[in-house]
Length: 503
Image (cartoon, rainbow, N blue to C red):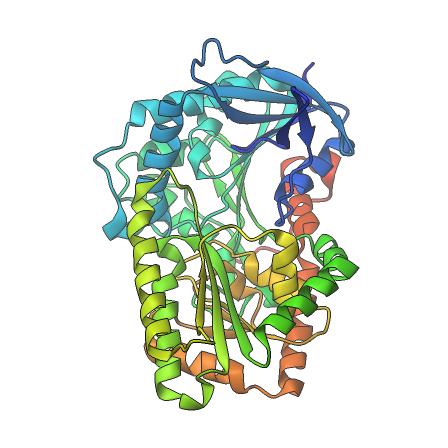
């Protein structure tokens, strides 16, 4: 059955659970709410589909149905499971996407690894995704493709199905031309993205960077720009821009540039924060930590997250402020992105060495200043810790958005707490009421954490009120509705644009 809306995303839209020998499809427990938000639009069209991969030893005989029909609280929809072998997954995702694309997207040119890239396999997998989307799409359908590992899907899909409307959303930063053009495949990638009707980004800076990359490869003439909304300009953020491009005009089409920061599911987080179970967990955690003050850091084990820099900053804090020894502790959650990827092992080892050194220097038989947690913490527990933590310390060196900081703000039902946030996280352009800091500067990091720990309650609450208003304004639903309104205004909303300024 052909679909009016096709979402192309590497994750399946459910969790597979085997019960009594039978596979059950259950709702994802994703705390950031992106998957359920995308699925919520299935109820607005008569027929919808989702394309994802599912690993199979033999892609020609995967041992599962490629196409299944799902019926859940979001409605009825088709899921096309693209069978990929373990070798294909390793090549296209773990190597090409993570070792070649990821460092360039985040500005770490020195981490870029070209040698192991198998570009033909990346193209082969992207072609297979495009074929699946083309097979599922009805005439004139809307196809929404997600993230950089599927960069070539729009170009292939346009060849197969020139009738469909195509949108692509970047969940990572998009670098400027002098960084992006390190990639030898830059021409193929940009041409594919210019086959879209809409290309979406978190913040204005990433859209401007994309335009710089396009202009390095093609003459696209005047690119109209409009003023950025004041609530997307934070004076303390290194990523704020005053204007944002709205469209790129090629000989073939107008490519709209949609800028909408991804948010969190505020209603879900608040509902969870207000449960009796969460209250009891928070009370238990407070009892366990006693009178100590808690700094909480949550992220993945990745060089972009600046985990080692943060631990060293905490060590400096204890060195220069003896009054805080035995009084403040850091809960540092750093979860390996994928245990099959050895590229992150040195980072994990470094974190363990620094945490051990700090505990050895400043700990005692009864008190350890750093708790390094290298496993995923259940979201219910995390929400309770958000309520306990005096400070959320989120200081990545580069981050497309960062949802942990927004989760912390949404979970603070008491209206208290301090958010220390890197100015190089996309979220910093929205969350100007946070204590913004430069993680590359020891002086800036030291000042920020001192400010957070010494901040009077009245100021804490005033800042948190502003932060919560920002997080509420742009939640997951706002993000998806804005992006889909650009792609398919007759189905998902109005796309009237503000008055355009000259370029």
